[in-house]
Image 1: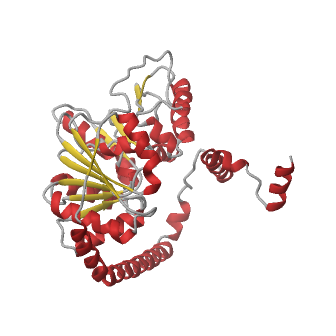
Image 2 (image 1 turned 45 degrees about the vertical axis):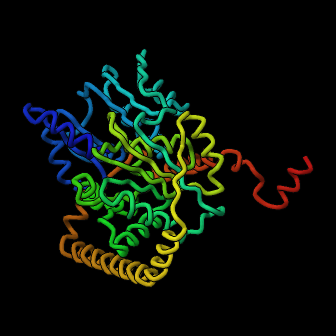
Image 3 (image 1 turned 120 degrees about the vertical axis):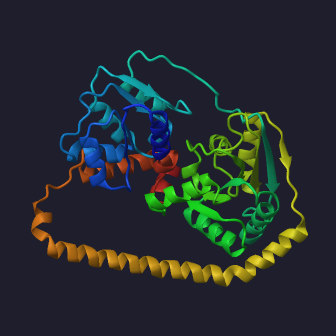
Length: 393
């Protein structure tokens, strides 16, 4: 999202003297430090990397900041960046303009608004719960609680090869491993190029995948929910929920990648028995009809047989990738050791990078966040003896 915002700002300001810096993890610290030293007018940043530069890059500060924009505030808080955002707010002048954007107004967002805003004016647009007007929503009902993984993959390949091979389609999977497996299957099945987007990829690899999809080189983008919010890619014709989202809000965020700005689009969601409750919530929330998509049994059966024949190749590719990763890791460790020997005095003379929290504070905050996620689960007795006592009470 930061890369996208940076790119758009550069286009908007191409005929002005406004300089825009991109400060995100996964890209060169030294290049970013040099850019910040030139005092750009706008900085687009992720919280962690911005704090890193505030504490460790000389001559960079926010004392003269005029405007602070907190975009996707609810998402930032969901991802555990609450303390980082508070630290950034603390380092900025009190006399500043603050703009806070959020798709949902949760209690955490309200607390952040109280901390960062003074007498705010609240504007609401496109209230949550409304699907895009020109979006056709379809569901594929799968038999069984788990949808039988191979049959589910067969249905996906059948639909994508027959209906979406010519256009831009985003496919959402629940896990990084599943997204990667689907990408391998698409390649072995010789479908139009598919790229992946998930947390196991480096920042450079993610940007490359997005660019290949955005440019039209790739027809399919197979992603986890990392791509569900904020990304604005022109011409996405379809969204496929291979794994059904856990909440109705997540569903709306996903399908919002297509049928944007008045364009037409289609969403196809695979629904298993365990997804029925969320499906009812979605029907109630969107107030839009969901059409059933039928895939012929014969077509599914043929794809199922093809997947079985491809399975040895899938395992071979995964093994080769694992060995290649181990080799890269070994080479990196060797280069690191060589660098340490050759430049030991210079490296040891560098000041250690600092952070605004101690390791202990970070652990405690992580534990607190985990307890918040578990909710009532965290209060349950931990062993049989405690459970018995609780029962007697």
